[in-house]
Length: 222
Ligand code: SF4
Ligand code: SF4
Image (cartoon, rainbow, N blue to C red; front, top):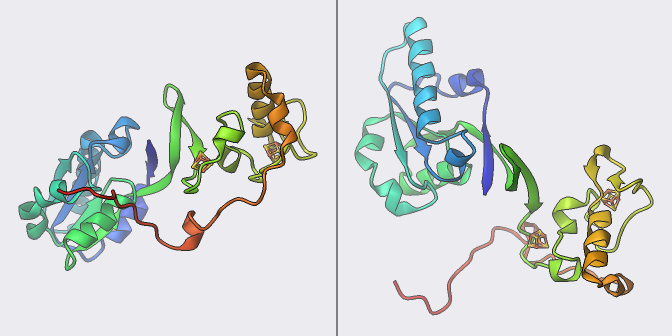
């Protein structure tokens, strides 16, 4: 899932300076599961803003509404009345949400309440680990199903580097060496011979380095 953490309240508060009516829009998918930007958290932010504005003698309302997903127009369409009444919309979705709101409501001020950090695997309760950076051309069939792009600090295609010590990465003893994990996995599969093959240069033109990407389902008719 996509993970995002809420910005510090003072930063959000500053972004709303000069705005009258506010609408806090929650998102009930990824950020709701990670307990950072769903209905409950959007409600909490709205309450904080109400209190702070009352204390500072600022007028205007602070309303809140939550949609299932802010990354789809059909859900954003459903809140058009609330959006029209607001002077500023504050999104608690990942950063796709506020940009979706900007696309759907081009004349409305929209600000993000969140910092989006990664696509994470729920490794244990309330702990997410980055397993993919959406490079656009997946190569984990050659690395035992473990991604060296997301999980090796040097994104090595042929590892490990000389810094791997005792199964840990040289950046920190808390970080597993991805290439040690790849080795262990291939050993368990009886496929260590795979490591004798040198992986050639990776196709990077499908990654975000090639500019904004679009995915289209070929032949799909709505
Ligand atoms: S190789 Fe690319 S697409 Fe595959 S898991 Fe790694 S980052 Fe994601
Ligand atoms: S120690 Fe392992 S994970 Fe860290 S940079 Fe080297 S190969 Fe990558």
